[in-house]
Structure formats: C-alpha cells, structure tokens
Image 1 (cartoon, helix red, strand yellow):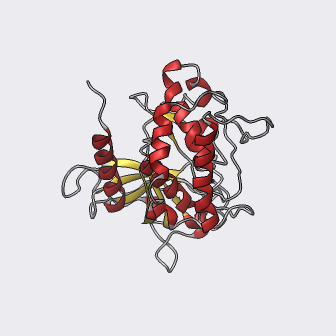
Image 2 (image 1 turned 45 degrees about the vertical axis):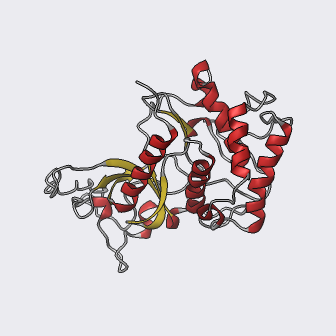
Length: 302
C-alpha cells in the first residue's frame, strides 16, 4: 500500500480535530503518574453519551468536586464509606444506554483530556499549559510535520482544557528502545529538530510513542515555547549530524510565512520571536543540536 500523501494526512487530521471538537466526552479515569490532572476519555457522538460515574456532578457549578483529584486516588475524605468505616467500592456507571446510542455506533475513539483547573502552577511557565499543548500541535502542522496528535481546546467535564487524540501505541516502547531500530531514525531526527524549534522542556523517553504503522508521535508538549532557552530532551543522539535537506526545506518555508494565528495568539511577543530565532539558528548551523553541558535532560528520563 502506498504511503498517504500530505493532503490525505491533513484531511485525516482535520477530521479528527472536528471529532474532538464535536464529540461528547465520557471520562474513563485518571492517568497515573501525571504531574497534572490527565484523564482518558471516550468520544461519543454528540447527544449520545451514556451516563458515566466520573462525569456526574456534585458542585453547584455543574462540575465534579475539585478535590476528586487532590491526592491522586479515586476517593477522598468526603467520599462514601461502608458500615465498617472503609472506603466504599466505586459504583460502576449505569450500563443502560451503552451501545444503544441513537446511531448505534458507540464510542468513536479515545482522547486525553487535560483540564486547566487540574494544572499545578510552575514558577517559570505562565498559567494555562493546556494552551501550549494545542499550540505545539498547531505549530507542527504549520511546518508540515505530522508528529503531534490532533489537539484542540475543549470545554469538558472539568472545564476548559486540551483534548488530544489518543494514540493506540505499543506502550512497551519508548525513545530508548525505538533508537535501536534504524528505521525510526529519520522520524527521530525530525522530532529532535521540532524540540529545538518549540523549545521543548520535557521530552522524556516515554513521550515518544509508536503506533501500529510504526509512525512516531511526540506527546506531553505543555512545557514548550518559552522565550528563554529551556530545551530539555532525551533526543541528543543525532547531535552534530547534518540537518536533513527535507527538514531544512520545511523550516525555510515555515519562516517565509507569518506564524499561524492560533499559535501567535497563545504566545507573547518574546515567545513568538523565540520560535523564529531558534528556527533561524538551526538553519544557520546546518546540523542537529548538541548538548555540550550534558545537563539538558529531563527527569526522569522515561
């Protein structure tokens, strides 16, 4: 089967964006080991979502209680208890309606939802990291690089946040295992260049996913696009290699047009200029970046 061309890819991504924007969300649960509140959701056709326990609301504003993610577990001090004083077992969602939506299709896909109200403040990044998640996708798309899953801003069960298409990946794989496969190196070089352009400050090995088609994806892009140089990534193995001609051509075209409005709207003037300055520097150097300090790594590495 021939590889899809750029038009087919763009059309497919737009379709996924539209689905993310239009679908109703059913929260399946919170992703473990996330520093910010991160939820796995199902995407249901608008108006057809079944009842879901995590989406039920207790607060007057119609949203779930804020303390439901305070300590990272499923239950907090104000939750139900059984007669022995132990935490009661979670009640499963009512199955009525599951698979019996008006169009009988059930969920159309899955997505990762990061609500604004679940972010932990950082001293060196502005509030609203979810907007940078979306800006990273929009910027990659404007360069023509299909390496960030479709990501939109969505007003979900816990308020506004980012909603990113869930990649059905081989989660036993990460950057360090993928590096052993020479067939991935062209994609990894592209991700190394992208991380410099967007000033990625948290490219851990586990943030590089591979799907069933051996396509690589970079996720968790909220810590990016700062005005100060803050690159921290595990992808230094190609440092010093010549910048591939096709990547240089893409970046040259990127510099010839205005920054995409949806990206520019998220960034301040210094951050906008930073994108262009880093891109110009990469083209002028003509090779992939190196880390002479040996300290520009995130932690943990995976």
